[in-house]
Amino acid sequence: MNNRRTQYEIYWEILTYCKTPRSITQIIQRCNLNSKIGQDHIDFLASKGYLAKTMDGTRSLYTTTPAAKGYVEIFMKLYLELFKNSPEFRL
Amino acid sequence: MEMDLELTNTETKIKKEMKHFMALTIMSLAFGAMAMAFAIATITTNVLALTKTISNMYFILFSLVIGFVVAYFALRYVISSAEVMSKFDEIQEDENGEKNLPSERVTERIVKLMGLYREEKSQIKRMILVSKIAGVCFFANALIQTIIVFITFNSGMIELIPSVGGILVSLIMGLVGFYLPSSFHKYAICWDDRLVKSEDAEKKMASFMEES
Image (cartoon, rainbow over the protein chains, first blue to last red):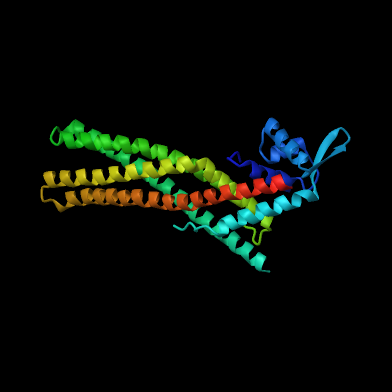
């Protein structure tokens, strides 16, 4: 689904998806990104130490590190609160 | 335990909202289709009337114009509703009727719904406007039909029944035309509120990332 997401939402999606090692192509496809933006986000998360790069033969694989746990948790907490503390839509 | 309960409540709230929004899009799709059918019927009837008589010509021409305006807006409305519905359906399909989803899946759903609203916000606002215009047109049509009935009434009850039926249908469609935007407006209020709060959440996440 190609909808408008914020960079923080994309970071969260990448970090959640990379709980098991994933290639760049898999991340780009799953998170619905173009290769340039996908690569930028992955590089940023790797620079923060949230993603670790490993090699599987010639393929680079990315895995979420324990350092990302804080971000993933705070994101979920804030987003769940966002829904919990807002008015409910009813017909 | 308390966290689980909160999560279940949020999950239930999301599911309920999704059901209500789906019902709203189905209603708006049906409204658009009915409005289009009604407009086409009005155009056909008035074109035929125009070929048979020249009395009440201005009323007939006015009804024709209204018919074309409603047909155009109804078509735009049906397309917009179908687009919103298809995107929304994509999110709903991921659910597969599962219950007690982990917090990660609930968050994923919230992210998708937020994205959908951000993407469709302008479309929804347009639908609100178009539906109001259609509502006004239906009320105008009901008024014109009433005037025509009064002018051409020849005391025949049998002739009167279809005309009154037509007026009633126009009035009901006019009311629905105003009910739907008010419901979409309620939906927009909820999501606008969430978007504003999400900006605060973003600031918190940005500072969290800077600190770490």
